Length: 325
Image (cartoon, rainbow, N blue to C red; front, side):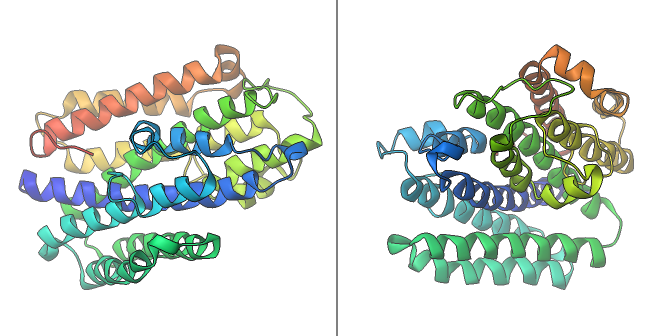
């Protein structure tokens, strides 16, 4: 496969996953920000949203106040935000159009139809109220599922498929680690311990904070099925870091990254595969009490550095030079 084709497929998947993540982040944050202040609702919630999405510096240049209306519009539609949902969908469609013959009709139609439908939301972006933003985030989530399901059910298991999966999984691992890190520290600013301990009962008031983190990655129902007990920060961390049966966990993502790298590996990618395997092993044999003793922030910071190094190596080994997010 040509490096240019692999590059388009890889970034197509990353942009679709990023748009889905932003939609889920906005929805979960709105729930938490709308709570009474006694339960943690606060305008500072939107600061943590900007940090989680990596858009804090870009938003600062707009000189707008940090509130729900400005932040949600910036993350949803703002053309000056390179990673707004609107821009992610446009870039995904641009990449998909460049490799149209590598995609099935179902995958292309999901992306193209979604992009065209997005235009109807964009035309109303200037006067978007809360319900309009909610409809747009729901649309983006359904579009992401349609794309992912179409790829899974209709694409031949060849290099085109493996590169789309690599892009999706690396983006998902980065997003999960980032939201865990930022959210735990945002909670510390409100008097909730940022570094959980291995065993803790937790206050009932904290339920809303941890539930918001779980909903950000569509894991609230999964948590209930796995633990059947009170939501605690240590268990939230365990579910989203070490559980291989949780699709958005770091362990699950790295398991699949290693499997996909094995499918597309070449003579130049030995070191990339080795580093991915080491990261996978750390997650496979890791223990949550050891991670929490080390410090969750330190652990996640190191993980993000390693997964970003892995992404750089994938770009260097397989994709066109100087690929950018």
